Image (tube, rainbow, N blue to C red; front, side, top):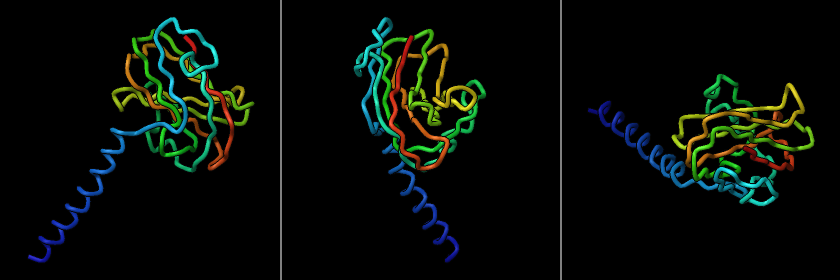
Length: 164
């Protein structure tokens, strides 16, 4: 009888700890500005045009979101538990490039798709040290973007640019 109540208590604790996590995921907001884009947008420095800014901060391992993306690229870096930006695509895009400019300080990118299961990841380790993702077939919907750093808890100012 005592063993049964211990199992019941453990089950209740797991259930109660899971419910807030699910609610936070559904209602999450971004740390910085959002981008709302339709095909043919003009890449100018406004949140409607394809460019926003922010700063990296955090020691959350972004690999805990997913180890690799839909193309097999590794998802690395450290950032905040909350996404840095929300990207809303009002229609499908055949091609998009998402790039971080931190003056070559060592950034990474993790982008979670509208289905919450598809990820795109990039880093700049082999090139400029600024993360970049160039990919095809971006479905309409809400994407969550984390800008991270190679070094844990390193704070870097950056500009995030999205181009067709």
